[in-house]
Length: 234
Image (tube, rainbow, N blue to C red; front, side, top):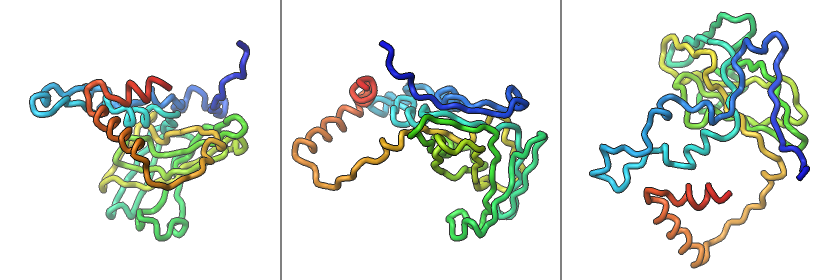
């Protein structure tokens, strides 16, 4: 009845920033407008396909979008891209630093070169319980077409300073505006001990092959095996 409290993640900011900068939100509350408008079934395609399901009925796609938290852009930032991405300038109307630059030598040989690496300044400190870290990735299935943040893992149970996020400008040449609240980073907390699984590589047994085929056939139905059998039985 009186078990341990559920693990929680905390986002802390300076008192003067509370209510001023955009706040972190559960990832499920930051679904993009295009996804919200998308019907689960494209009725116009029913005549030419078996079920005409869209990604709105794809649980792996949706679960990725719903996992963890989204750190939004604290304030509106303007990104000016020129020379095919080799020149990037930033500006903002805010009294906190929003963007600075990394030196290109720090990512020499990176596939994004010669695009220079930038750095978004985050104004939220993150705390997790002992043994918990956070994976930081670009918002899953939410590309903005202007910038892409580099992924990283931080032991947020010990590192309580502000975490800033390297990025590359990927947009076309021109001036781009990223509004305050734009999803910038998806934060996925995980217990480090859960990430230490032993890996085994082998051939499947006949029973495992039969199970794989059964699930594959059922997955294509309108009801969806994954939603009924895997997701709802957790």
